[in-house]
Image (cartoon, rainbow, N blue to C red):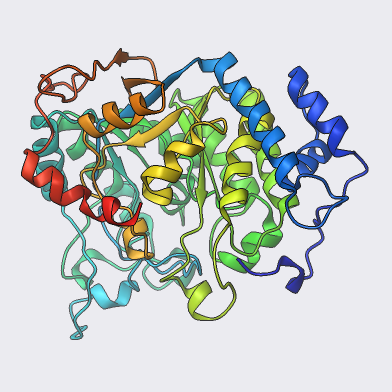
Length: 456
């Protein structure tokens, strides 16, 4: 992480509250203010750095709140990632998932590692995963210039208008088709479809005046089930102007999320922290999410994502030298639990943190441990080192080892089943074709989990 003082930010971690008062409010279950949150996430603005004793008090309060709200269950979902394309021109400085879209054009001769899938290919990826027991497909993709909401949208876009960021599909080696076609293909394969971030929704209505509500309604009609509230990064525009100036603003992100809720799509919300932002930005972000949830009551879980810096432009250009510390990660989880009094579930990401640290964060206020993820490209391409697959047997063993109860869940948490670690075999049971068979053969599972084991 860089020193946020290098940037002339208007939002700074000052507070007229005291740490002791903020902690007392947190312990009592009172709704916290921004000043309270700043005191807790910094362990007091009256001290330099993080005070270890105070930190433990915050973690204890968050873990107690977690037990009160959701008990001792730790949930996970059997899912597969199917990212449709890496082609993207947005230019976010924290991302190494994308590949500049012109590389995908038919007249580009240099090799690249990117990919674009047709709807038929997406269908086959998801159908195979469903056949193996998966419940959910998560699909978050680059903003391919040939992508449109549907054919009507494509016809309305002018390739000569640079603001449309549109080029016709014949310019590319592979036609991504449309969002509607991709969503329908994945839905028809049988999975619960968790897809189309606010940023993708903006891309799916650029150049027309349909609005987010119509976009999400048409996608829901095509088979979209829930919406990932990613592309949030830090919901403070002065930070977004530094790390992702080409992305939608905070207000646009909120408007898209409200539209998704309005058409009846449950959604998650995220934060990506540990880059150029300061502690106050993190709390202002939580405040935006809490306010959104007050209005919609449609956010099923909050997902803190620690910035993986190693292979990103922010790191390559010397803007950041590292990510968040272990203590910052613990406090981010804990204060998320305490501040978001209207969001029931907080996730710990084993992809971001690895096994040991991910499990520790389950004692800092988190209660969800992500998903099986049969494939995961985004964090891996940014330099993440913690593997690409987690079996149900892994979940049962690890969660039981910390004295908690493993629970397989649906994406929206409406379906749940307690996993008995003594079951043999141990596999998912909530998916449309799940029968308890492990998602992958034992040898493949050992290979897929190897990167995680080596680094934890």
